[in-house]
Length: 148
Image 1 (tube, rainbow, N blue to C red):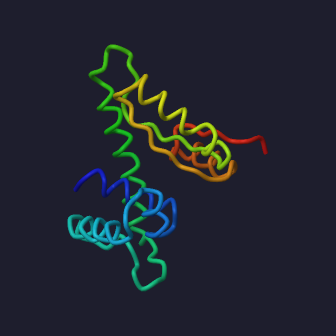
Image 2: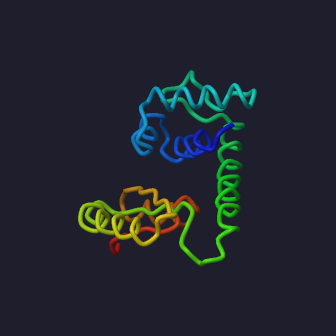
C-alpha cells in the first residue's frame, strides 16, 4: 500500500468523483482508476460501488478514507520528528480563492520554495466557503479567502 494511493482515495472522497480528483491531483483518470483498483486488491474489499455513476464510496470505503486521513497525518508528524533546526518542512495543504490563485499564489510558491526547500506545498482552489469548510475539516492547513 502506498501513500499516493491513500492521498488519491482521500481526494476522491473529498471531490466526489474520480475525474475531479484526477484533475485536482494532476493525474489522468486512468491513473486514478488503476490506483484505486490496486488499493482494493491490496485491502481485499471494494472501496467503491461501481454500479453507480460516478462510482460512490462503499461504507467500508468511507471508513478507509477516514482512516487514511489519520494515517497520513501521522506520517507527516513522523517526518517532522528529526528536524531540530526549526526549519519549515513537511507537506502543507493551502487553499486559494480564484483571484488569489492568479495574483498571489505564483509569488507565494516561488518565495516559499526558496525560503523553505524542505517544505512541500499542495495547492487547492475553490470558493471561500468551501475552503473554510475544508480547513475546519482538517483537509487543508490554511486558506486564502475573501470576506463573505
